[in-house]
Image 1: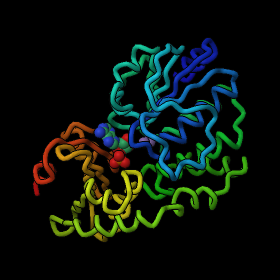
Image 2: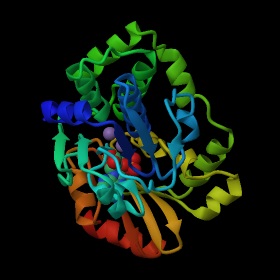
Image 3: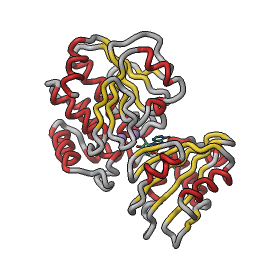
Image 4: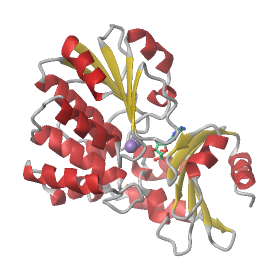
Length: 314
Ligand code: AMP
Ligand code: MN
Ligand code: MN
């Protein structure tokens, strides 16, 4: 598969790189590092992300301009990164297929193999681990700009080496990135210690919605558009709260519901027990990893909670 991708890159000139909506560190870091690599090889790389880069990742070096509107032109190939399904690219995703051959690079267990070429490794800690291997097989000499993107992607997807997906490659690759000049304290400062105080006002309100079930093994909390408005925040300020709730002793599953509109909620689920939340989210039309998954559920808050309680037999 790596050889096939190498041939596509060697024989092409212009490429589109894209990733999922609600971008996280792995999606942003993998996509930016892929663009840096293509530019290093003298190719044209266009990055398309439906959403803006969240403020905490704005420090990452960006090679060329990012587009937030769907491109019109054709490309020699389209690299779709960190997406279990093509729909994760966001509204208008069907059009992407008409712009060029799809190369799907991902680490989700639930990947739908939507590409003409699918480079999927569910054992990889992050998509960035696969991108790192791609750099090596293409003979690209890694530099600081690629390194800091890869480092940030791995740190965030492994929860700073705490989640179950942390493997030896995560440490080995990050160690190499440090030798390229990446500073862990600089990255952590930007990603984890650069929040506006409004984020914490928001968290305070979210905590008042916390409910636990089944002898405190399942936690459900929610964030509404009203809460965002009241605190002057938006979705990006709520990233990471679901992981914080995992710190509750004895909790096995955390569900954070975020209101998209009055009849649609995005559920983020995390597991630290034996529950496979990718399977649970799969039942609700989403997917992800065993211990971190998501889905979008239609209905009012009570209906959505009802659907969640039903799948967990609460
Ligand atoms: P999140 O809760 O949005 O941080 O997502 C947790 C994990 O599940 C990530 O790996 C996402 O890529 C994946 N995921 C989130 N939402 C969906 C969805 N609607 N469909 C498939 N996978 C998802
Ligand atoms: Mn991701
Ligand atoms: Mn990922």
